[in-house]
Length: 268
Image (tube, rainbow, N blue to C red; front, top):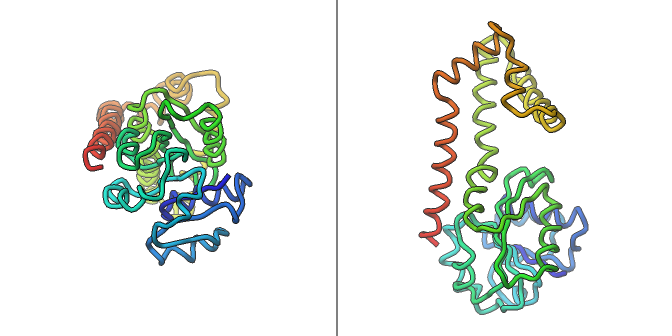
Protein backbone atom coordinates (compact mmCIF):
# COMPACT_ATOMS: atom_id res chain seq x y z
CA UNK A 1 0.00 0.00 0.00
CA UNK A 2 1.27 3.44 -0.95
CA UNK A 3 0.65 5.99 1.79
CA UNK A 4 1.02 9.75 1.60
CA UNK A 5 0.89 11.97 4.69
CA UNK A 6 0.09 15.60 3.99
CA UNK A 7 1.52 17.64 6.85
CA UNK A 8 4.75 16.84 8.65
CA UNK A 9 3.90 18.36 12.03
CA UNK A 10 3.58 16.49 15.32
CA UNK A 11 0.68 14.25 14.31
CA UNK A 12 2.02 13.67 10.81
CA UNK A 13 5.34 12.64 12.33
CA UNK A 14 3.55 10.38 14.82
CA UNK A 15 1.66 8.56 12.09
CA UNK A 16 4.77 8.29 9.91
CA UNK A 17 6.81 6.82 12.75
CA UNK A 18 4.08 4.34 13.74
CA UNK A 19 3.46 3.18 10.17
CA UNK A 20 7.15 2.60 9.50
CA UNK A 21 8.05 1.11 12.89
CA UNK A 22 5.14 -1.35 12.71
CA UNK A 23 5.92 -2.29 9.09
CA UNK A 24 2.53 -1.03 7.89
CA UNK A 25 4.43 0.19 4.85
CA UNK A 26 8.06 0.71 3.85
CA UNK A 27 10.10 3.78 2.92
CA UNK A 28 9.69 3.13 -0.82
CA UNK A 29 5.89 3.29 -0.55
CA UNK A 30 5.67 6.16 1.91
CA UNK A 31 5.86 9.90 1.28
CA UNK A 32 5.24 13.16 3.12
CA UNK A 33 4.09 16.44 1.62
CA UNK A 34 5.35 19.25 3.87
CA UNK A 35 5.79 22.86 2.79
CA UNK A 36 7.90 23.84 5.80
CA UNK A 37 11.41 22.70 4.91
CA UNK A 38 12.53 23.34 8.49
CA UNK A 39 10.80 20.08 9.43
CA UNK A 40 12.70 17.98 6.89
CA UNK A 41 15.54 17.03 9.22
CA UNK A 42 13.08 15.64 11.76
CA UNK A 43 11.21 13.70 9.07
CA UNK A 44 14.44 12.30 7.68
CA UNK A 45 15.51 11.24 11.17
CA UNK A 46 12.32 9.17 11.40
CA UNK A 47 13.44 7.36 8.27
CA UNK A 48 11.40 9.11 5.59
CA UNK A 49 13.24 9.60 2.32
CA UNK A 50 10.43 10.75 0.03
CA UNK A 51 9.59 14.29 1.18
CA UNK A 52 8.34 16.99 -1.17
CA UNK A 53 7.37 20.63 -0.78
CA UNK A 54 4.69 21.26 -3.43
CA UNK A 55 1.73 19.10 -4.57
CA UNK A 56 2.59 16.97 -7.61
CA UNK A 57 1.89 13.62 -9.29
CA UNK A 58 3.03 11.67 -6.22
CA UNK A 59 -0.33 12.53 -4.64
CA UNK A 60 -2.13 10.64 -7.41
CA UNK A 61 0.05 7.56 -6.84
CA UNK A 62 -1.03 7.07 -3.22
CA UNK A 63 -3.64 4.50 -2.20
CA UNK A 64 -4.24 6.24 1.12
CA UNK A 65 -3.84 9.96 1.79
CA UNK A 66 -3.60 11.13 5.40
CA UNK A 67 -4.62 14.76 5.91
CA UNK A 68 -2.55 15.82 8.93
CA UNK A 69 -2.63 19.60 8.51
CA UNK A 70 -4.27 22.10 10.84
CA UNK A 71 -7.94 22.68 9.94
CA UNK A 72 -7.25 26.37 9.36
CA UNK A 73 -4.80 25.41 6.58
CA UNK A 74 -7.25 23.25 4.65
CA UNK A 75 -9.21 26.00 2.81
CA UNK A 76 -6.06 27.25 1.05
CA UNK A 77 -4.62 23.77 0.52
CA UNK A 78 -7.66 22.03 -0.98
CA UNK A 79 -7.45 23.70 -4.40
CA UNK A 80 -3.79 22.60 -4.73
CA UNK A 81 -4.66 19.00 -3.95
CA UNK A 82 -7.86 18.57 -5.95
CA UNK A 83 -6.18 18.21 -9.36
CA UNK A 84 -4.13 15.24 -8.18
CA UNK A 85 -6.72 13.33 -6.13
CA UNK A 86 -9.11 10.75 -7.60
CA UNK A 87 -12.28 9.16 -6.25
CA UNK A 88 -10.55 5.77 -6.04
CA UNK A 89 -8.29 6.96 -3.24
CA UNK A 90 -9.12 6.72 0.46
CA UNK A 91 -8.73 9.94 2.45
CA UNK A 92 -7.98 9.65 6.17
CA UNK A 93 -8.42 13.04 7.84
CA UNK A 94 -7.19 13.83 11.34
CA UNK A 95 -8.16 17.50 11.06
CA UNK A 96 -10.29 18.66 13.98
CA UNK A 97 -13.72 19.99 13.06
CA UNK A 98 -13.53 19.49 9.27
CA UNK A 99 -16.52 17.34 8.33
CA UNK A 100 -16.58 14.42 5.93
CA UNK A 101 -18.96 16.26 3.60
CA UNK A 102 -16.65 19.29 3.52
CA UNK A 103 -13.69 17.11 2.52
CA UNK A 104 -15.73 15.25 -0.09
CA UNK A 105 -16.93 18.47 -1.70
CA UNK A 106 -13.56 20.22 -1.51
CA UNK A 107 -11.54 17.35 -3.03
CA UNK A 108 -14.16 15.70 -5.23
CA UNK A 109 -13.90 12.36 -3.45
CA UNK A 110 -16.32 9.98 -1.75
CA UNK A 111 -14.13 7.68 0.39
CA UNK A 112 -13.36 9.68 3.52
CA UNK A 113 -12.50 8.48 7.01
CA UNK A 114 -12.33 10.98 9.87
CA UNK A 115 -10.25 10.18 12.92
CA UNK A 116 -9.25 12.13 15.99
CA UNK A 117 -6.10 10.79 17.64
CA UNK A 118 -4.20 12.40 20.49
CA UNK A 119 -0.57 13.21 21.18
CA UNK A 120 0.16 9.87 22.85
CA UNK A 121 0.03 8.37 19.35
CA UNK A 122 3.68 9.46 19.20
CA UNK A 123 4.59 6.60 21.56
CA UNK A 124 1.98 4.10 20.36
CA UNK A 125 -0.33 4.81 23.32
CA UNK A 126 -2.79 7.13 21.60
CA UNK A 127 -6.58 7.06 21.61
CA UNK A 128 -8.37 7.59 18.30
CA UNK A 129 -12.08 7.96 17.59
CA UNK A 130 -13.00 7.41 13.94
CA UNK A 131 -15.89 7.13 11.49
CA UNK A 132 -16.31 6.91 7.73
CA UNK A 133 -18.43 7.83 4.75
CA UNK A 134 -20.74 5.22 3.23
CA UNK A 135 -18.50 4.77 0.18
CA UNK A 136 -15.64 3.32 2.23
CA UNK A 137 -15.67 -0.47 1.84
CA UNK A 138 -15.43 -2.87 4.74
CA UNK A 139 -11.95 -3.92 3.68
CA UNK A 140 -10.79 -0.31 3.43
CA UNK A 141 -12.22 0.50 6.85
CA UNK A 142 -10.53 -2.50 8.46
CA UNK A 143 -7.26 -1.57 6.77
CA UNK A 144 -7.38 1.96 8.20
CA UNK A 145 -8.40 0.60 11.60
CA UNK A 146 -5.26 -1.56 11.57
CA UNK A 147 -3.23 1.54 10.73
CA UNK A 148 -4.76 3.41 13.67
CA UNK A 149 -4.01 0.47 15.96
CA UNK A 150 -0.32 1.03 15.27
CA UNK A 151 -0.68 4.36 17.13
CA UNK A 152 -2.65 3.00 20.12
CA UNK A 153 -6.29 2.13 20.79
CA UNK A 154 -9.20 3.19 18.60
CA UNK A 155 -12.97 3.43 18.76
CA UNK A 156 -15.28 3.35 15.73
CA UNK A 157 -18.43 5.48 16.00
CA UNK A 158 -21.29 5.52 13.47
CA UNK A 159 -22.23 9.19 14.09
CA UNK A 160 -19.84 11.87 12.88
CA UNK A 161 -20.89 14.25 15.67
CA UNK A 162 -19.11 11.88 18.06
CA UNK A 163 -15.82 12.73 16.33
CA UNK A 164 -16.18 16.29 17.59
CA UNK A 165 -17.07 14.88 21.00
CA UNK A 166 -14.02 12.62 20.86
CA UNK A 167 -11.92 15.65 19.99
CA UNK A 168 -13.11 17.36 23.16
CA UNK A 169 -12.63 14.32 25.41
CA UNK A 170 -9.65 12.28 24.24
CA UNK A 171 -8.16 14.50 21.54
CA UNK A 172 -7.67 17.45 23.90
CA UNK A 173 -7.73 15.22 26.99
CA UNK A 174 -3.95 14.87 27.47
CA UNK A 175 -3.72 18.62 28.06
CA UNK A 176 -6.37 18.40 30.81
CA UNK A 177 -4.42 15.64 32.52
CA UNK A 178 -1.15 17.58 32.27
CA UNK A 179 -2.91 20.69 33.63
CA UNK A 180 -3.99 18.73 36.70
CA UNK A 181 -0.56 17.11 37.03
CA UNK A 182 1.10 20.52 36.94
CA UNK A 183 -1.07 21.69 39.85
CA UNK A 184 -0.18 18.56 41.83
CA UNK A 185 3.54 19.05 41.16
CA UNK A 186 3.38 22.70 42.21
CA UNK A 187 1.67 21.69 45.46
CA UNK A 188 4.31 19.01 46.07
CA UNK A 189 7.09 21.57 45.61
CA UNK A 190 5.36 23.95 48.04
CA UNK A 191 5.24 21.10 50.54
CA UNK A 192 9.02 20.67 50.36
CA UNK A 193 9.77 18.23 47.54
CA UNK A 194 12.29 19.04 44.82
CA UNK A 195 11.03 19.42 41.25
CA UNK A 196 12.32 15.97 40.15
CA UNK A 197 10.76 14.39 43.25
CA UNK A 198 7.45 16.18 42.62
CA UNK A 199 7.44 15.00 39.00
CA UNK A 200 8.10 11.40 40.04
CA UNK A 201 5.44 11.46 42.75
CA UNK A 202 2.86 12.86 40.36
CA UNK A 203 3.62 10.87 37.21
CA UNK A 204 3.81 7.53 39.01
CA UNK A 205 0.59 8.29 40.86
CA UNK A 206 -1.21 8.84 37.54
CA UNK A 207 0.41 5.86 35.87
CA UNK A 208 -0.36 3.57 38.79
CA UNK A 209 -4.00 4.50 39.30
CA UNK A 210 -4.82 4.18 35.59
CA UNK A 211 -3.37 0.65 35.63
CA UNK A 212 -5.19 -0.10 38.89
CA UNK A 213 -8.50 1.20 37.56
CA UNK A 214 -8.23 -0.88 34.39
CA UNK A 215 -7.82 -4.03 36.47
CA UNK A 216 -10.32 -3.20 39.22
CA UNK A 217 -13.89 -4.45 39.41
CA UNK A 218 -15.14 -1.27 41.06
CA UNK A 219 -16.13 1.85 39.13
CA UNK A 220 -14.36 5.17 39.63
CA UNK A 221 -16.74 6.46 42.32
CA UNK A 222 -16.42 3.26 44.36
CA UNK A 223 -12.65 3.50 44.10
CA UNK A 224 -12.69 7.10 45.32
CA UNK A 225 -14.69 5.97 48.36
CA UNK A 226 -12.30 3.06 48.91
CA UNK A 227 -9.30 5.43 48.93
CA UNK A 228 -11.06 8.07 51.07
CA UNK A 229 -11.02 7.01 54.72
CA UNK A 230 -13.69 8.61 56.92
CA UNK A 231 -12.25 11.79 58.39
CA UNK A 232 -8.95 11.26 56.57
CA UNK A 233 -6.73 13.32 54.27
CA UNK A 234 -8.21 12.13 50.98
CA UNK A 235 -11.74 12.86 52.13
CA UNK A 236 -10.69 16.40 53.08
CA UNK A 237 -9.31 16.99 49.58
CA UNK A 238 -12.29 15.43 47.76
CA UNK A 239 -14.77 17.38 49.89
CA UNK A 240 -13.01 20.62 48.99
CA UNK A 241 -13.02 19.75 45.27
CA UNK A 242 -16.75 19.02 45.52
CA UNK A 243 -17.37 22.30 47.33
CA UNK A 244 -15.60 24.16 44.54
CA UNK A 245 -17.70 22.24 41.99
CA UNK A 246 -14.51 21.10 40.27
CA UNK A 247 -16.36 18.33 38.42
CA UNK A 248 -18.74 20.91 36.95
CA UNK A 249 -15.84 23.10 35.82
CA UNK A 250 -14.12 20.14 34.14
CA UNK A 251 -17.31 19.13 32.32
CA UNK A 252 -17.89 22.70 31.17
CA UNK A 253 -14.30 22.97 29.93
CA UNK A 254 -14.76 19.84 27.82
CA UNK A 255 -17.99 21.25 26.42
CA UNK A 256 -16.08 24.42 25.47
CA UNK A 257 -13.65 22.26 23.52
CA UNK A 258 -16.59 20.54 21.82
CA UNK A 259 -18.12 23.90 20.87
CA UNK A 260 -14.80 24.97 19.35
CA UNK A 261 -14.59 21.76 17.33
CA UNK A 262 -18.03 22.54 15.93
CA UNK A 263 -16.97 26.11 15.13
CA UNK A 264 -14.02 24.82 13.11
CA UNK A 265 -16.49 23.29 10.66
CA UNK A 266 -17.56 26.81 9.69
CA UNK A 267 -13.96 27.90 9.12
CA UNK A 268 -13.31 25.04 6.70
